[in-house]
Length: 309
Length: 298
Image 1 (cartoon, chains in turn red, purple):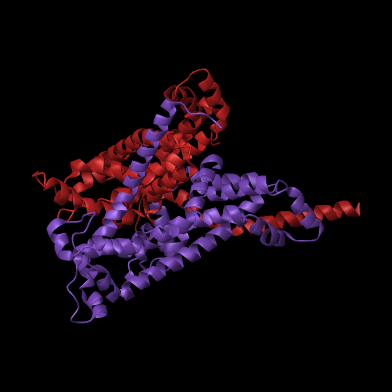
Image 2 (image 1 turned 180 degrees about the vertical axis):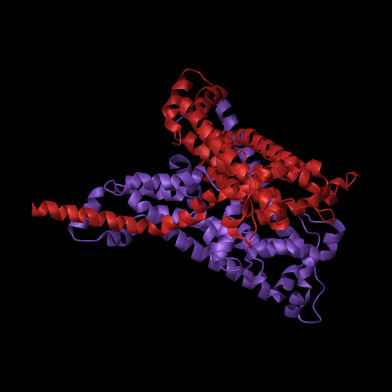
């Protein structure tokens, strides 16, 4: 009887101590994540700091009406979606090809070296990336204008004033920075494939291409599906640094570099328009959430083991 | 030992050459930046940035040595924020992950959901910005550079939890309990030290997050004294002339050398990237491992 009481007491003490350990983390999540989630209601208000957040007037969908009446809403949505689509399709293809190449190498030393080299750009901050891009593109001393276009007798281009080139520039920059990471992910999955399957295929007379087509790629499919669906869930988000700092915040390029994230920043910090920026932020959060849920539903249907929840 | 056919050997050779070319391509932009930073200013004005300088010069670096106060200050801010942010992040991440890993803790699923949900839905930057600036007043403090990133990759918490669940036997905790150790003691004396492998990986990624962050300063910092190296670089890119401004020239004094504005941009880039370049050879192994762990278990 006494022992039972004591163990009950101990169990409660354990629960309390364990709970206390979580307090700092929970408080942080409350402040950093959960309060802002409830804070999205400010998109329906006209914030007036003199009246306070709660005291400011409700304006219904007025902020959204203003936002969607501008061409900005269309441009940023189009850019965000199209860039993400290109990144998903081309990025996935490039990473799979690079992973297949790595998978062919039998020399561990060189394989490790290549992995390091392709992962390196992932560690470079977007600010430094903007410096690297600048070294190639700026009109006074950039490599492309002075060392390629000029010797060929072609007209030099002021890259930072010509929006039409930026989809390619940003795609290349994106691939340079991120392809190594996804390549290593896919490579890790390939390394997990049972070697005896390849041996058996070889005995049956399957060549390299056939092995890739009939063994490696099908076995990689679940991983690719998962990564692509996760990316589709984030299709309303963009890498702020890539679209803001790499084009050096150049106003002439907004038509091809403005995404929802850069718009929210510019509306909030440069135009000081809380209404517009919170409406754009709300739009991004809610559509993003719906997409994540939908993407997960789809994974669950296709491949229940890989669903997130 | 497997025997490779001639076709396979050719394929392997092709893969090697292709990967070698891709790897070189990945490194080239950085080489261009380094080469340009060591090129003579006049030659840069004439020929632009090139991979092979026709005239070497240390002017940009000499100029920066004269500017050491601005650069050292920014370095100091970046180092302080990286160290403090990484440490605080590690402590709250593991403290949150440990109870989640305990099968006898009845709220563990609720906790896991609370952490996980932050990965699905976010209120966006506007409410966060108003909260941090209006309620907590972090504008122009070091907190602005540390707080918004602390648990940013919430999936680090889930990674540590998975590590505790699969690598540390429950019997170990039970025997410690029998010996009369309290939960805090078990966590700090046993669990935290035992999880060093996963903590080291997370520390590396968090340190990178903090070292490479500049967006928080964009939102929350207006006074240059709180600029880390990344934000100093943005400022240099936007306005190379600021070194010549009253703030800059006060540091150089009169009779300074002519500002090598073309090469100094690249030299600043090199200075900003230097810690990554130096650390990379020692950490790349763990980084690759970290990518794989994140992919397979995350």
